[in-house]
Amino acid sequence: MIRRSLSVSLISIFLLVIGASLAGAADGPLVKLAGLEVTAIGKSYRPDAARVVVQQAHSNSGGNTSARNVGEDDLDWKESGYFQRNRDLGQVFTAERDFRLAAIVLRTGPAEAAVLAGSPGAAVFVQFFEVRGEPRIHDNGTPSGTPATHGFSTNHRCDDYLTGVEYLPWRLVTGGKFPDLPPTRDVQGQPTGNKDGCLAYMRWRFVGEAQPELVKGKRYAFMVGFQSPGPGQGFTLGNANAAGVDAPPSLNDAHDRYHGGWGLRREGDGTVPPSMIPGLQPPDDATKMLQLRRESLFAADDARFRLSPTTVGFPDVDTYRDLEFYLETE
Ligand SMILES: [Ca+2]
Image 1 (cartoon, helix red, strand yellow):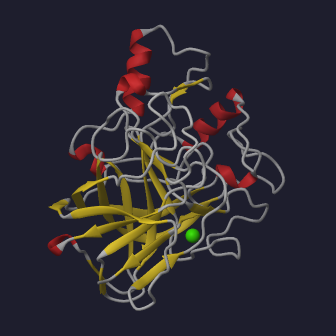
Image 2 (cartoon, rainbow, N blue to C red):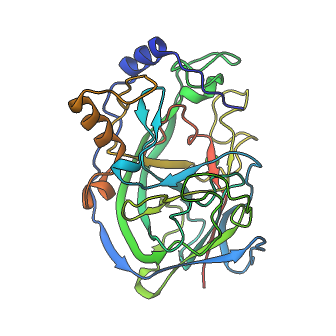
């Protein structure tokens, strides 16, 4: 299991090593389309072999892999020195044949943060990217059995990340609302005890022109999130994560559940690494507060959707992660 054990000096060294230039804006058209409809389809889902072209059908039994978008006054302070960043989540996949994508089936996560109180009815989007290049694991060379260099995990895999690929913004599909799943936490952030929103399948369906035509052999990515900030907007996605595995870095070993892609995120304004000012409370200094808040909120308008996704995290848990997902044709 990944354990957060903070070591500020090690983090500083790591930050110097990886530099601050991993995240950036990506060129490419950003076609905006309405035509997203999101529905909850129950706790069981049997993929129809005639309609499902690509799938990763496994979710871990624990963990909160969260997408969220809250306003600046609702950001959650972490004692390690930052406001928890707003985040979109996604997945790279490979089109195994030419097809027109009608829907993505996703599953909420198993644990308590599956559906936060502000999620049902909130406007959501799906963004598509074309993915160019060949992924290479930037292996920091941390020996197996020793902690990640940044100190955020006891696992050696968690300071790796991917290079060698570009994510070109392609289409942004809006018009959907998060489905009416019962919240697993209430407006105060306390558990409701209702598990109906955990491990629940959702179909994110595209209507008409919003259905992308995908080309055999090409890599793409989809990313989902809340369009605008709002209180209590957060949900988790079920996924298979091999970041905690004690094995050499690999994107296609037996621990990886889907060799055609990997997990992705977009966090805050994209600053990598994020600024951190450890403390029980946020700093008093207004300038520092402004900076910390700005880094944790999404950029306005198109700047957010033009920000390149990344696998880099603290720890990096996306490189070795695949969402549970099913790509359906009509
Ligand atoms: Ca994978």
